[in-house]
Length: 239
Image 1 (tube, one colour):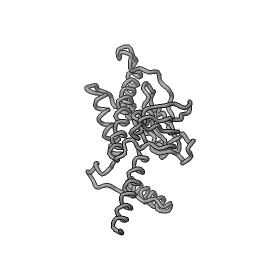
Image 2 (cartoon, helix red, strand yellow):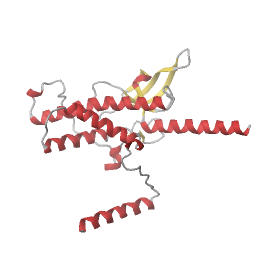
Image 3 (cartoon, one colour):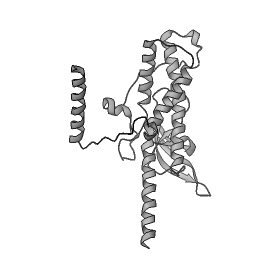
């Protein structure tokens, strides 16, 4: 009874604290994960990649907890939106900011993905499993970002000053290369296929199929398109 009272008290305290700061909660219907949007898509990709990575392997409770905690930390480092509108800003808001107040940091581990499992110690085998999951999940997550961007109707809507994710191979866990668009190079058909980007290490030229707009940037683009379509429809009705 005391535990139930404590949970209810903490829930009311959280609601009152959020209300005082103007935060409102929007809940989805029970058993309707398709209403969740981006976060449910992330859960789906995490589950599918975890099943494919573990396969028929049996893990103890302690091993499973260790693997899940590190996978959770890896997923909570994904960039969501720029921290500011400053065009020189190369830091992004992540789920880890909401949990700890700052980005999540991990100690670098050697790469075990290319080493045969029977040559690794038990802890190294778990790290190898986590690294395999990272490689698979990160690839599927970037693919999901690309699909969401194409659904918005603007697969090449890359603009100057926009923050993007870079698709770089061989990156370690929790490494998300970020860049800002400095210039775009449209072709003779006015379709943008190449962009000049600025990273922490310098300025490079990359094809846009290796650049991924951040998820909330995609939502903003969709909202802007919907707003523009509504305004044009209103003008047509007025005329």
